[in-house]
Image 1 (cartoon, rainbow, N blue to C red):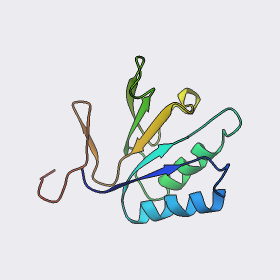
Image 2 (cartoon, rainbow, N blue to C red; image 1 turned 45 degrees about the vertical axis):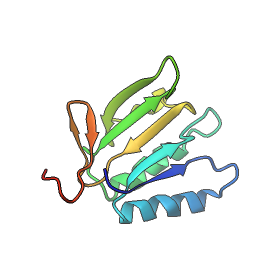
Image 3 (cartoon, one colour; image 1 turned 30 degrees about the vertical axis):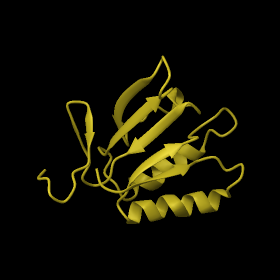
Length: 119
């Protein structure tokens, strides 16, 4: 894969307006975006807001990976699209990776080609 960015959706220490600005910049730069601290019982609207922002500039069928409990015994990974994210299944143990304009899913491999690869 090429460049990517990671953004925490926790607004406990970072103002939400700054988090939104970071997401918008990542979208303009066509970065693959990894989201952590995506959603908790108290913070349950931020992820939906970010996905709505993404849908303004990315296709609804953009691949999304939701990995949960990464590095732990009960680790899981599931693939969705921007339009089919199951918000109720996501918590603070989840990491969400949103593909860029070139990302595809090939045999359960999240693939974002570099310049020398052909689609």
